[in-house]
Image 1 (cartoon, one colour):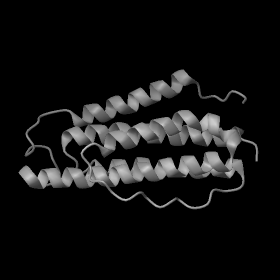
Image 2 (cartoon, helix red, strand yellow):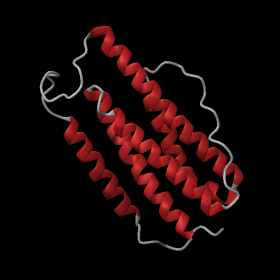
Image 3 (cartoon, helix red, strand yellow):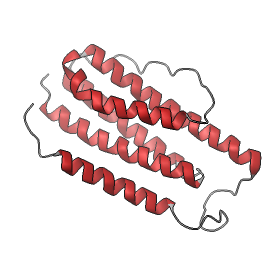
Length: 172
């Protein structure tokens, strides 16, 4: 593969900056009645809400993971390049699944494009959707889960960027 303008150092710096920004916005006074836009939850209600958020987030991540598997299966030449991103998505899925209800496996995301470049672009779109879904969940999440969702959303955004760059250099 030819080298793009994106370097490992640049990608790591961008990821670190996004994660740091997300963590800093999630930090602050633990008094839930100050600065929270959502309702203040107590006891069992908070536990149910967190489990529901975790279940939805884990399902979104599992769907993206299935998309990686389908793309690697359809285009074996891409499997090596997608492996590190797939591994990260798998780790995100496991982290988000902790404390979540066991949900049925998500349906396969559908057929993958026969064109390798288009398949990578589809993966980038799936990562963007994952980043958006996790960012949306931040609005109602408790602080600890919000920090996890922020970091996973930042990672998904970086994955989308890297996949977009990979699509530019992938031959059809």
